[in-house]
Image (tube, rainbow, N blue to C red; front, side, top):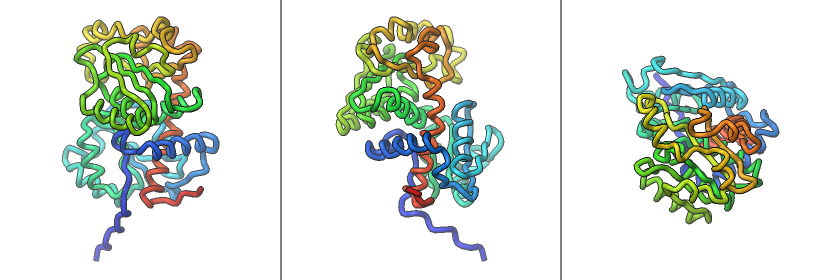
Length: 324
């Protein structure tokens, strides 16, 4: 007789969008990330080792390495699945894949296209599912950015973050939601027709009302930059948009983060970029390679923030014991 599956925990926690963490929970994750950065091997919720599976539908450097290294440092064994190496979403439904994986692995991480796939995976999984990037959101990147802001500016509450460029993408959406959750004043600037989705802006304003933050969406780069503590941008030409390159470069030219843009921000402002960066396009070389740039601290913090997130999800889901 086939044994019955292990009963599901009372409430498995997933991380599909930034607001899946309350403001207090986000602080818990960031506090844990800071601790893990100091003592990288104190938490071993995947000891055994248990497997953490990481699916990639898109190419990656930082996401791939940080999750693989993070799962290993949490005591687990990372299994990287590249496009075409599984039945997921092709010969087998997302729901059936989830039902199989939950019996074999401790956590599921997926870098994909449609947010709906992640939602379906989480709906049928009894282990945590993590959004490693979708077309709509990039919440793990924001946790790393918030950790970096805390390190360099002493905290997030009341700080002003200005995002310039393509404001209709997953990065702008997650900056709105994640930074509003952190109590920041979020200013998003981009050209008309390339601004955040209205439902995301509404959700960010709702969260900001809880935390004392605020949200501004504008087509005026100077309005967003004035006195900002943190200046952020992202590539103007994302994967799949290569045939639009010249048109997009012309469209976003006025939103480049150069020395003049940084001069409008606060005197102690820091510059962030999720990378890869294209010098001379969304950011000038003198900015990204200059003294206000903390992009490599930010890149390293992907490891620490994601380790903390995975451990926190496992602890809160009752799938590992918190050693603290």
